[in-house]
Image 1 (tube, rainbow, N blue to C red):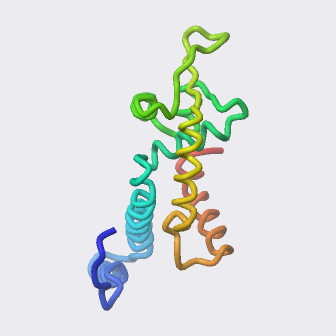
Image 2: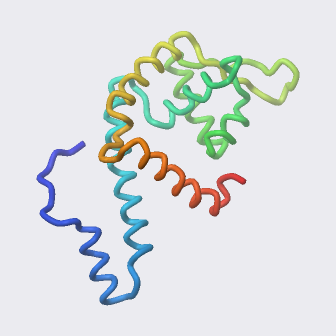
Amino acid sequence: MVSRKPLPFDPIMRAAALWDERIGPARTMAAVTSVMRVQQILLSAVDGALRPHGLTFARYEALVLLTFARSGRLPMRVMGERLQLHPTSVTNIVDRLQADELVRRIPHPTDRRATLVEITEDGSALLDAATKSVTSIEFGMSGLTPDEELQLTDLLGRVRRSAGDFD
């Protein structure tokens, strides 16, 4: 993350005040702008923690997902559904992980049209190290109590549900 001197004011709240004066209620604009800025902060922190491991957050999430599977393997289609990614994105992620020998593709035992992705021992070892890195910085989430983190997750879950992310 780029180190810079903090502003002496909250630019989002300043913009909200101007929005209120010139356009109308700024409540939603301020909330969305705050979420977008926090996303930038979190991505920067997480990317910084994962970079020494040669991982992006998307690749890290894929490895985590595979370890959550009982067998350590999943069909690519299921990976896309769970990661909420387009099949092309899943293919690109798996291609990169496979090139680094962190996963392997194997034929599905009962469905010739499907391919399974399986985490390798190297993938598991790298995932362990990367997880220590991101958890040591609390995924970049600072300034909230554990109860506030739960509340934030609940509030954002409501937005995700209303957008059709899940039932």
